[in-house]
Image 1 (cartoon, rainbow, N blue to C red):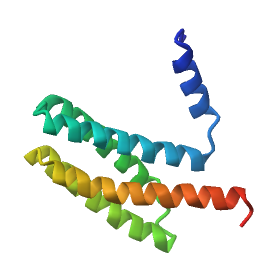
Image 2 (image 1 turned 90 degrees about the vertical axis):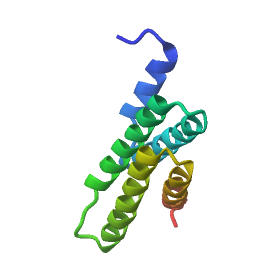
Image 3 (image 1 turned 180 degrees about the vertical axis):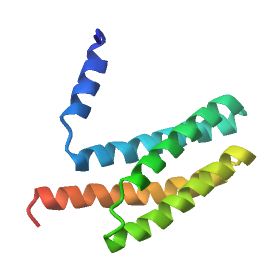
Length: 125
């Protein structure tokens, strides 16, 4: 049982989120972990950088494996996710923040587009 009210709220929000909202949460989490990884790289905290880069990679893997490859845009998204994965791996191997920046730019663009799509659907457009 969770006794922390914030943890209870967070668990409840995840359990009641739509598929679209869960995808948005994944994008947000990925961006958060990339930001933490970049800070860790800049602070020369190798372990923290590694931990956060692995978390970001796990999220990108989750986003990628849920794609429906029968839909044309999924093939494009797969290519983008593959590129992001490669940038995150390079960032982890070299501890260069520039690779994190490249990956984050793509994920942020996808997140923003996804959020806009959710908003358009909610407005009935």
